[in-house]
Image 1 (tube, rainbow, N blue to C red):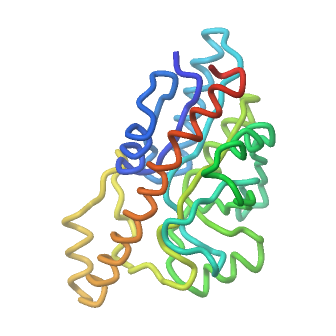
Image 2 (image 1 turned 120 degrees about the horizontal axis):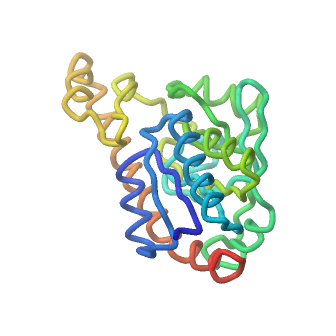
Image 3 (image 1 turned 180 degrees about the vertical axis):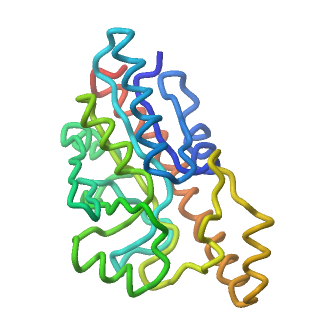
Length: 237
């Protein structure tokens, strides 16, 4: 039975994870970039372990994210120290597991940072800057807070490993709103149709696609080493 449960928002993220680490000790679920579904999926993983009488299980939120720190560029790796929300919730990532990650050369020099968990797409540069100034978060995603809440309730370890797709200095096109299906696939036709109403968004979508590929590349390159370290260096193996 799997010892690590990974919650992704998108099918493309899940594919990158499985490519990096095709091991049955790791299970992957896709939330469709939705915190409530991420919570339900993570809770299901926790309940499965409880039913089997297994301890030493870990939940990880993995995927691309938006940058809030101006210095972040597409493809930069982010390891969460904690996840915060607009309602003031705080979910701390497991320090023991973070220490294990630091043993991997791919995590060398990375300082764990705050991640903002949002229930809405953060579109504008102004909103990204406001969140950075008010919360201290350096990146934002839409499912880490759901997975973190389930892990906390179950008493399981939690980590968030993300890679930057859209940087702080770039706004997202409005066509990117509601662009993800519940199964984590992209609404390609609908998104392109909306973008065609304002053709400049077509180039913005192309840039976002290129940046997302860079982020996914980072995840596929890094995760194999990370998951191997976590399984070998803890009671998860």
